[in-house]
Image (cartoon, rainbow, N blue to C red; front, side, top):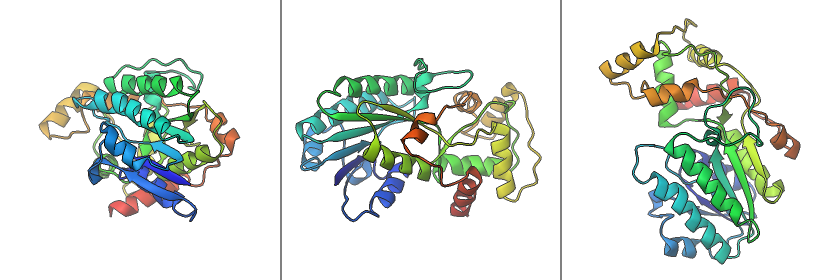
Length: 290
């Protein structure tokens, strides 16, 4: 199969290329800003999409303060979709986010009403609408991913904070169900093969640890004595400003404090079985950081 991946040089894109390349019948076409590509450029999209059967749309901006966020996440998605239809591709798989649900309580599933709050969350919800509106012209699937755990700069900083025993500026009792990047790549591969037309799949790991339990696990795997401590939010934010810790911003703390409890029965029914435990994922990531 000829498979085009937008955002191919990102964390998930790299994992997906490694996985899909194991099948010698797959030809991977990369499309990434790091390679000089631009999803807002129809000509470049059209050129790369010639003969493509499957499009995996991963590219996007996550920083709410970026003035390119809406343009890339919404209009960029629209351009990718339009060019995929023109190229007569068979299928497009769009990587969305559980952020489209906004602030939740209890268990969240594909049927939970969308209630996006941030610009990023709203951009993903709007992109989903655009994708689903064209399902009569091309086979579409949407994957709503939980927070992605992997060896990127964000998690490197987070692991370093835990290694230095910085206190959490929140109580940490919220469910913190996330997804390892290698598992997400496996889910995307499964959806390429077996995803039912027009369906949305929620992707998250099986383990439902609290944020406190997750942080304690990381500290243990880093060889740090488990002595997780907490401070009030206000104190934490002041602490972050004084020591210039970018992760200790109001937005990021609220991001970590959200309830993340997901029903993943639909993706499991499709055939997904978790290969890597959360402990194994943390171990692999920690080893990459060393």
